[in-house]
Image (tube, rainbow, N blue to C red):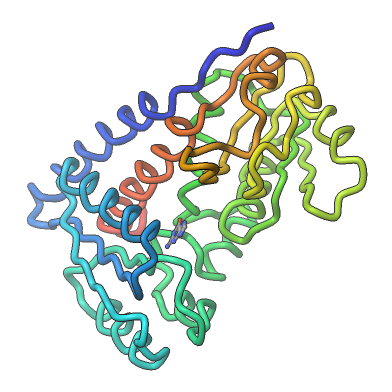
Amino acid sequence: MSARILDGRAVAAEVLAEVGVRAERLRARGVVPCLAVVLVGDDPASAIYVRNKGRRAAEVGIETRDLRLPASTSESDLLARVDALARDPAVHGILVQLPLPPGIDARRVLEAIPPDKDVDGFHPENLGRLVIGDPRLVPCTPAGCMRLLAHTGIDLCGKRAVVVGRSNIVGKPMAHLLLQADATVTIAHSRTRDLPRVVGEADVVVAAAGRPGLVRGAWIREGAVVLDVGINRVEGRLTGDVEFAAAAERAAWITPVPGGVGPMTIACLMENVVQAAEGPPG
Ligand code: GUN
């Protein structure tokens, strides 16, 4: 088998087109959807992500407010800034770019974002709602992965899905979204015994371990769907967590890196901003 490419740029463009329509509807009601992006310090990768978010937002009619703070910012100072954004009725979404400099407790900062403005979906209330099957704002990368899976047209009910990686921002929420779609879900991680066998049983593989080429092509079950969340810089090039060429020989569908999951994350962030600006359903 030779895999079909799951083109994240194309699917993201569809999502962004819908988001643009919703943003326009909000503007017609006098609501300008607004995302506040807080960047602390000068991590170069974070600066690139933040710039890309600002560009995408402008394209779909979402306003952004950029808050750039020095790496020397104290936790209490940052909490006060987040609190001011939390109280500002013109701000619908708040995103604090991670990682934060040492000395700042990211958990405390994320918990200071009101759940209804938490467009990253990282607040314990939003993650808890996802776990109990009543999701509101869902983390963007896992949400983007689900959109890509929907694009394949494959029914996930009863399928075996393996998520490699157990982070709070990707692996854990991803597993719960797959569970909600009635897949049988395994979360594998760095301590998993016999990872090749576990991956080899999966109809859907989501690689989110942050280790370049960890998932070998030969492990992939014939006809599986492979989503590669990894963005690793190796010798100046971006590579995923999956050994792409060999995996593509066996998979039915596979995401490239770049151009797979990455564009979906930003598109789903924009979707969360309009959702937050629209307010609670009903
Ligand atoms: N750093 C890397 N990925 C993310 C993300 O999805 N959201 C935030 N806030 N920071 C990140």
